[in-house]
Image 1 (cartoon, rainbow, N blue to C red):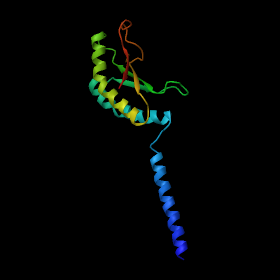
Image 2 (image 1 turned 180 degrees about the vertical axis):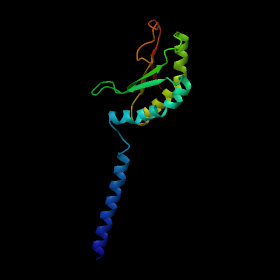
Image 3 (image 1 turned 60 degrees about the vertical axis):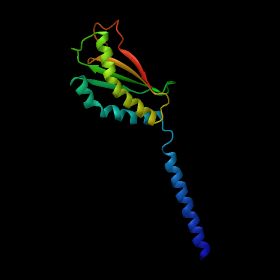
Image 4 (image 1 turned 90 degrees about the vertical axis):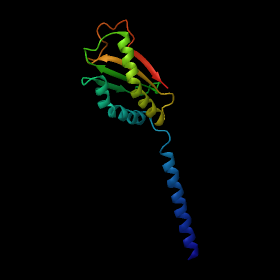
Length: 146
């Protein structure tokens, strides 16, 4: 009878230890698709704050690395602003500066989910989805990183 109790005890101990090991492994490497999904949740949560900072007509697009791409640590963020936004380098630099706290949150999340050396390719677009008219000679694209 003692032999059965010992056997059951050892079995339960082994079962407990393997379940602890599985829980620990679940926080290790996740795939690029899941990394992007978890990071994009942060972008979605920022929408209302973005509208308060940049105006009610502000929209955004957030894209991950294409499937099978060699560069998987750089996501693309397009901030789409109202057509009435003044087109000048000083204004675009100011917009970038105002966006940096939002980018920091995204970069933090990218790092937390396992993206090594995270980067955000940041664009300032018109709400129509392209560069602002008259911005051809201005910088409206930056690589933001830690």
